[in-house]
Image 1 (cartoon, rainbow, N blue to C red):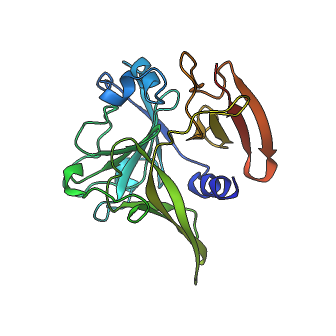
Image 2 (spheres, helix red, strand yellow):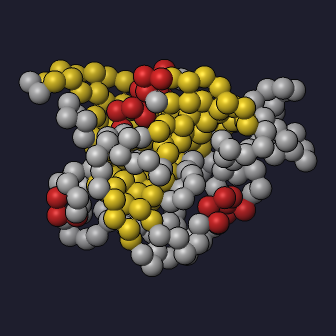
Length: 253
């Protein structure tokens, strides 16, 4: 939990300006979303919704820096009401705001969609536990850059493999590296949580939460694991006051 709390703290920056993007295309579920216990199954509810956009720098597209190769231009969060954090602007095209994971510019992990300027097919497939799928760089001024290196195989999740601090004239920065792991196939034991939620409240973005989910095991037949931290079967856990983070544990129902 220590690492995930730190990552969330560094990646959330107060003071974003909010605008609304209208007429976003209806969500089309991919084949993963059809499974009732999949965390992607709730995406289908997000049809004809406006998406709030937060700018990491300034308050408009022109205020953003130009993306470096394979940098994430926008991070779309579909956990609840969809919202996007814009991190940079594409030099020769626009950053996709589609909620469809098969728009040709999306690398998705759980309830996050990472949009890149380049066609996603140009990214090779990662090897489990070996290749770094993406790197998050947190600069001393709290601005961030996420660079994609490869795509995780289907039915896998990204996990933190390395955290590196570096010192500059401007202050301390951090670099986080993530690799790919297969989704767990372990069956849940009695009274064992099937999923953990880490919920970050952000000043400056009061109407959205940054939520990280981790699946721990698979529920028995005819049972399901909660997909939201406010669902039935979820128990509040520890509060990390310094990071404004609260954890929740979900149990098979």
